View (cartoon, one colour):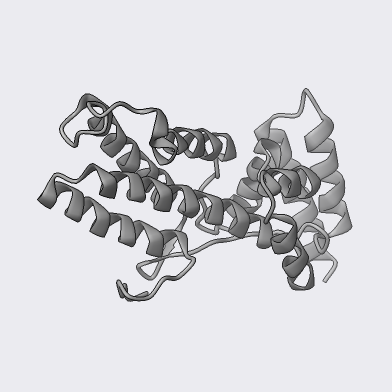
Length: 213
């Protein structure tokens, strides 16, 4: 996707490209305001990635309502509690499926995403900072710059790359084969099933489906 500074696109990777521009301005002009704006773009990029991953786990006709439900404060959290596709066990389940089908995919650490969102918000809501803390060469702003780089790395390592482009993968929970849904429910509720057990159960289901074709 070509970056055009006069056009805004709600895409996590596109927004990270905008962050690069803001960092260039910040470093060229020793401008801490650009660092704060970069934090805002990082926050939006993280939220967009969270939302996109949820949208890729539901039917297309359900997505408009999910977007609407995500608009209020903490809306993405509430949607995720209902859908569950960003939760740790679901992400491991999806990872197991990707491995069985040899799809390139990266485990998504939603807990890490939320932590990064909280930390960049410290700089977005910078009203509490002193004039010294807001100086570009302060330790506070140096920490801010390192945090921005951490967000960039997190997002880019959370997405698989195909033909040089980052892609978002997902599996629709409702349209999964019933036998896989049973495994998912067992996996979510079990305290004893490990990842290898999960993969074995899914592999057996896959083998049976192929034999019964």
